[in-house]
Amino acid sequence: MTYDPVYRVHLDVLDKIGKEEEDMMAEQRKDLVALFRNICRVAPAATQQFIKGLIVTALSSAEATVEDVEVTLTLLYRLGEAVSEEEIRTGSGLLGELVPMLLSARFSCHSHRLVALVYLETVTRYIKFMQENVQYVPHLLAAFLDERGIHHQNSHVSRRAGYLFMKAVKLLKAKLVPYLDTILQVLEDVLGQFTSMDWANKEAKLSSSEDGSQIFEAVGLLIGIEEVSPEKQVQCLTALLNPLCHQIESLVMGAKAQGLEESSPRATSLLQIVVALNMVTKGFNERLVMISRPTIGVMLKKTLDVVLQLLVSFPNVRPLRSKVISFLHRMIEILGISVLPCIPIALRQLLVHNEAKDMVDFLVLVNQIICKFNSSASGILEDVFPTIASRLSVILSQDAFSTGPAGNTEEMRELQELQRTLYTFLHGMVTHDLSAVLLAPTCRQYLETIMQLLLFTSCSHKDILLRKACVQIFVKLIKDWCTTSKADDKLPGFRVFMIEKFATGCCLYSVLDKSFDLRDANTLVVFGEIVMAQKVMYERFGEDFIVNFVAKALPEAHCPPELAEQYYQKLQGNDIKAFRSFYQSLIEKIRQQQNGSLVFR
Image (cartoon, rainbow, N blue to C red; front, side, top):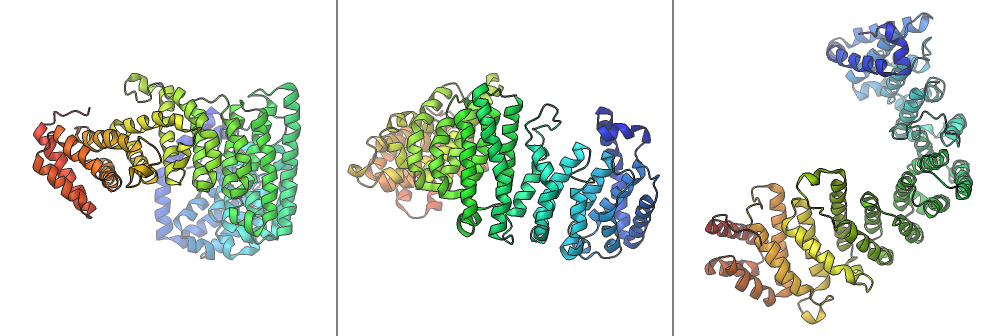
């Protein structure tokens, strides 16, 4: 169960050989771990006594090997998996001795990556012990913050320690408030290193989920705890935010003079600063910063203003733009309505040199704005909608519906993702009382294109859930734009379009097509929406709908007159379930009559 000492160096630097050995050991230990768990359950006291003996031996010997210490800590970790959370919290059995022993442990080989990592994972496994034994919180903090954790010489260990410390903060929260000053003081150098301007020899991989930024999240979570006084929060946040904002301003000034290359150290530093700021804000919520502690809201708003300079100055640096968008998402969530004045400038900058993937990110952001602010976002939406529509009409003019070999290319997948996001965006607009934006003078010219796209998708798109979204959009537009009186319709011609194109094409011929599988659960959901659409059209369009659908469309689809009459009777009733059931049987009967030969036209 122990590693071969011959791989010790490889496991420390984690090169290719070390990684292979680590993977192999994990595989080999699977059966042994299962066996050990069973032993823990059958003989818990004996198992704990055995592990205690191993730990005492490892701590008392200056000659304890990496391999022996690693397996000792691994057994203690696995013991934590076998016992209940309640046993960990109360320290039952020998756990009341083992956990304090673990927290104060400093092994002679603690500098080795393998030992340091399993030590931190094991400490994390027993964190709930501190919930009822708060006297050991300082020992826990030391384990995470000193050279055994965040200040470990190995970057893999220090980054992992930052992530695990963040998890500890989430769990213990208020119990850590008395140690806030100490924590910030100890972390000061690490926080500064993360956003250092000298990235030439930086080992950090920015794509990693553990890049060191979790320390900022942990600090943000600590400062954001409501048990921290307002004065203390402002003091700590000022000390954290001001240097980062000054760094941005300094870097922007230099980049404006010399230009900003995407892969340059300056661009990377800016990117990391925005990541750090984003992580810090995870400790705050809208209620705290806008209601109970508004001073913090003002500070975060000023920080947002600084970050948005990056969009204005460098809209074409894509990695940086992506991080700024993430930060803007966060600010919308916690600053609420106060962020609205900043949004138009940001959106205009984000529309510069957009490709399909960029438009997806942009529409996701706009959709968040819609969902967060509802009709309050109408002015912003009117401002950007024409640009969105014209840009999308160009990008989506390519065949985003392709199902052939070309449909498998990365470019085609991006177009299809953009199309899905577009429907989410339109769906968000109409369900958040913003359909009037489409009727604005600057937006009307795009209505024909949008309606045709929605019609095509609702009738024949291969993604059945997109069809559902489009049907729902049409139903909401009918309710918003049409009344029982033609004279009061908000969009001339829309009523005729819905009766002649949508009702016939989507509500009848698309469901008659054999590809519309009424045995499929998702298809039945869409069918339910189509049935509801007919009820809404009858309520709003009345006799006009009946004349076109019952007297014209159904007979053309070879529906027997008696079934058409029954359809009319059911449509007039109040039982939507009965109408749905009847319409499904009607479709199936027409299909049988046509022997499956009718094809959607």
